[in-house]
Length: 311
Image (tube, rainbow, N blue to C red; front, side):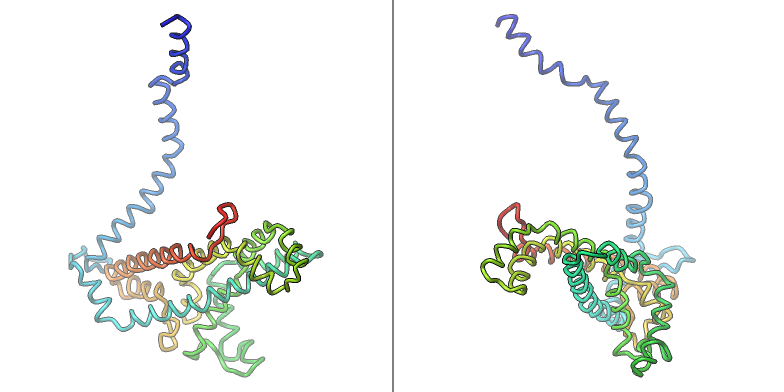
């Protein structure tokens, strides 16, 4: 082997950092990552591990946990009728609130897309309720609007919705629908990415606005629809504050607003059955994971990614 070949063979290895240099770089990386890693371990992983342990115990916040095995889960599924009422109320809420919120958000985004003047103002105005979030003050105002003698009662004479089992849950769902600003902004961003040439070609072919919506807007916007659907579904399963405020923490009337998280709070912090509440929390986590997995599985048949050219 000549001297030139030897230098050529050695040259690539000269660019590789020596072990002490690599160790210093890795050490610096871990120093910068340490706050996040420490926070994740102390504030997330450790509480989850403790909660999992408590779900197999009888724990009342005052005495030491007593190991009971699967008794909390058995009682939950076979001996607690209020648990199943909370599941039913939550599922009903998700089925009502999520489609209505996403439908309204998409409709407003479509209207804003075609608007030439005042778009920034209306976009900010529609987004403002989302900034308020599901705060207790907003929920209390909502309760006053739908209570006996409230705004809805004075306008329509229907009585207080929050005092009627058939209407209380719908009143809570409307509060979620009213806060459609976040998905609306995401929809608007997605609509602006759809090439205008597609609509021009459809108009030349004589396609109606409705046909353009079904054949162009929905397929091209399907990844954004899927993203909003997953995000809002997960949030809907965890709703707490509106139900707590509207029902004064009772889940009434007739357990119609006894959402899963509200019943979990009642078992854990009102009745001091923290072991039972921990078991409920883990069942909720598994349920949300299962629903999310189903959404991802079914998305293969209707979500269109233009970069891939298929569904």
